[in-house]
Image (cartoon, rainbow, N blue to C red; front, side):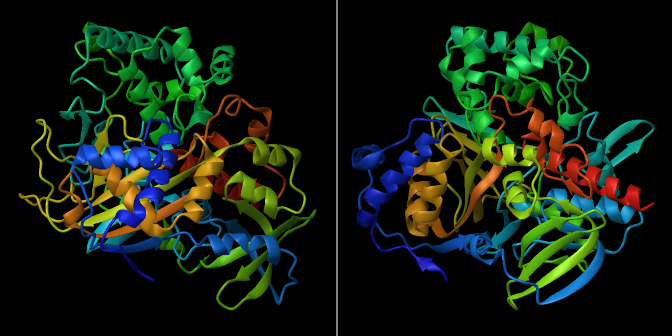
Length: 560
């Protein structure tokens, strides 16, 4: 059912203030309570005004997942057989299916709770514009990400001619790519430069040197992470928060700390006080390094400048390509109730939500491509390592709001135009992506702004707020955050669709990446293989595809 926002905002102020407080708890100062809302409205010069937009929640059905608590003991209505069962149709599950098919295994089934495969990489359409429900880009793969490189080669997005790698220019992110609102205006790039002092630029240069030093050992930081080395130095970084490590290096410049916190919230769902120092350095050392403005050492930097592949619907473009060859084997709208392993087979009980019938599937092997805490609930005899993962691996809740506007935004503050990625310094959110950035139109016009927020700094409160607060309250919270830099936004909004993820991504908290329990789960587990980015404590496309391919290859090899 679609909702329509009421004609005035007066009834929203209390709840919207609470929403901004929750966003602020995600890692940065936000407006909290009625006083914060009043201050924001006063600063923006806003009063009660029409809010003619409509919208609703989309995507995940929490009521389906909660059925697991009551339906797990239902007896089967029928029994069927197949060679391999894949539980979960996110990128890891789809990657496993791709590897099975490549290995000659064709008798397999994929089951997913949702109505479409793709997991965090799904997308939708708002106001006629394609937009992402989750992940919205894929960096071009580095030296160790052959899983992704092979996939891009297959889709003809990447070609290698005479040893030179080239990417389809139409799929690489178009310019302008990113901008930041800071010091009263927009600047090009996300590292704060506008209005910063000499001490801040010196801090940038120092951090740049530390990143180069961390990456100087071959394979010290790689994607996928399973192909990197693990040393005592890594263990020491993993044992402390990124904030503690920054303190030890006397890196206290507020602009640098904000930027690093933003990067961690963007990639891990939680800020520098909550992720490990290993994760904080991995963000830069595994990809593009850290470029300090006017740094003479930059001439000798040994990082590759990686491009970004993106589409209006985000990584849903890739997910749908991955899912297409397995349509006949994929059953969506299905709740897996139970996975039981014996010496010779695996039993998987599946509830079809449409018919309300339970089928018991008998299979030689099962690939569990769900978050590890879900896997621990499904297995009748979960290993100790899986129990530990369920108890100790935190997950960040996320919100994605797709905002359809029927006219271009007024762009007059600063000298950086509307970009693909648009971030606000000091905002509790993560900014927004312009869905029409990849178009070739020569003029600004209607579009969809995809707004992101992560709540990994306080996952319990974040999940509670996502479930309990209504669509209209969240819509107002998002608009109030953006109106600080776009005072003309509200009259142009026609529809807002909000996607909520209760457990969007694993948080690489201190002690997680180097834990014995996570290392144990990366190894084959009898007839059951785990395949999820949780195994890396790092939720990105590359990690999910890697673990899916590893599980699919292991299963197909055992059949041969």
